Image 1 (cartoon, rainbow, N blue to C red):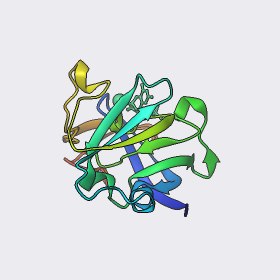
Image 2 (tube, helix red, strand yellow; image 1 turned 60 degrees about the vertical axis):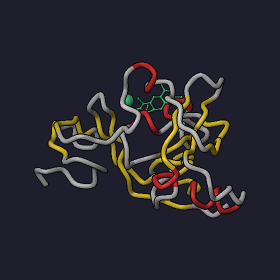
Image 3 (cartoon, rainbow, N blue to C red; image 1 turned 120 degrees about the vertical axis):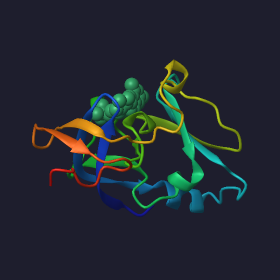
Image 4 (cartoon, helix red, strand yellow; image 1 turned 90 degrees about the horizontal axis):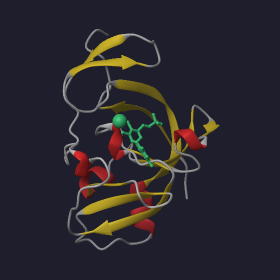
Length: 153
Ligand SMILES: Nc1nc2c(c(=O)[nH]1)N[C@H]1C(S)=C(S)[C@@H](COP(=O)(O)O)O[C@H]1N2
Ligand SMILES: [Mo]
């Protein structure tokens, strides 16, 4: 599969955000390669041991920076960071970026995943507020939606 490098941020609902060059395979490319049924509505990522899982709408899964990532700033992802392969969904809160992915499922119905059944919102829409920017170490304001720029930049 072709490699894609995306300049993107992972932003957690627990209020940290980290930016880097994520290398991996676009989920859209995988979907095209396996000729996913056009009726598919959700993509679900399953982590090693199949306890952690999370699903996102197919429209988001097909976006430019939605990856099955295996690199961060040119280095292979270690296990703690979700290696060897993890989901990266910079468009939504970090819990939609499943680590150590072993299975990707294409479905037409939605079910809540690991954090969602424990009360995290199913939509995971990033809301404005303050986060700890792990690149600068500073607490900075973010707008709603994908974190591309901080409001103090
Ligand atoms: N398998 C697995 N994936 C996971 C999690 C987890 O606990 N287990 N935590 C999620 C949450 S809440 C966030 S914010 C990100 C954190 O990724 P990081 O540990 O690389 O910063 O991973 C997500 N993916
Ligand atoms: Mo998180």
